[in-house]
Length: 183
Image (cartoon, rainbow, N blue to C red):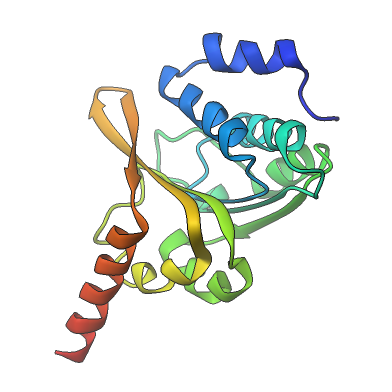
């Protein structure tokens, strides 16, 4: 697969479902995202669209995507996402893909140092703040001054939105975690 075309991008931004994901594709274009991290993968289809959009609008450098997810261990009711199928589908994009199975907040700290200078971090609604308490400490080291951190928030039955978490907020959560640990 190649980078998405102009018509494909327009389809994603104006017609894709669910609606709240449209802003992701706009942000990838606006910020020329090259390095993405997703904590709790929404779907393989969305990840493919993110990579293809990034390939179209990046500055000519390779696009890198890292996804942390439960894969086969997803909770009941969540869309199934077997690791091998996700890996095969995402590899077809031509981007540098790394998928990390396991409980996302527990596996993130193991790789945080290798994910420095990430342009966009997506946090799933399935990964709550209590689960992230240990991972918050590692997130600021993954960021640079222009990193966009988006937190998916449930606003109703099957309705979601993305809220922006500032770098200052990440540092505050990291400091809270450090102060709790010291106590």
